[in-house]
Length: 221
Image 1 (cartoon, one colour):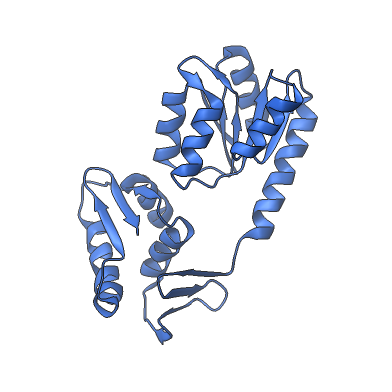
Image 2 (tube, one colour):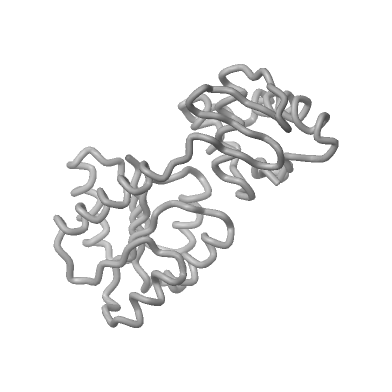
């Protein structure tokens, strides 16, 4: 499980990263809004632990920005702001949980496990968008009720987009998911697979389904 820690206090950030790594999580620690944006654009995370008082902005504004952009990762706010109104504001903006400082590490871990269980429980087995229907259990795809034949890699690529409709996915993120490594994104292999998906879906639909974001990646529209 990949965890992103957004915390400007160096000692606390390093402590959380080490504690999570020792418990078999893959933890990344960043100390600012800018670093958090970059980290989340580069790859996806299973849970984000977010401090609010960051040196280059407010964590609530950052969270609001993420939700508007379509990022749906579970977020646990970890903040010294412990007033009831602060907790309400955080949850209203889009946080999934709120833990005030000072805190117990074991409680933090328990709350993270709860978010992970909740995330696993709500994962849909059927993904749909613009007439496209993908069944994760039967591994089938239909377009407006008609079956579409996809290779295993095309299926995996389409699944990523259907799980993130409207979200701009970077070439690096897509390549990590499909090829399970930092694939050389300068090659045209990803573009070849995108062309195949477009041919199979956009032609019958008669309208664009994917948008190319130059220099960044692709978006399901």
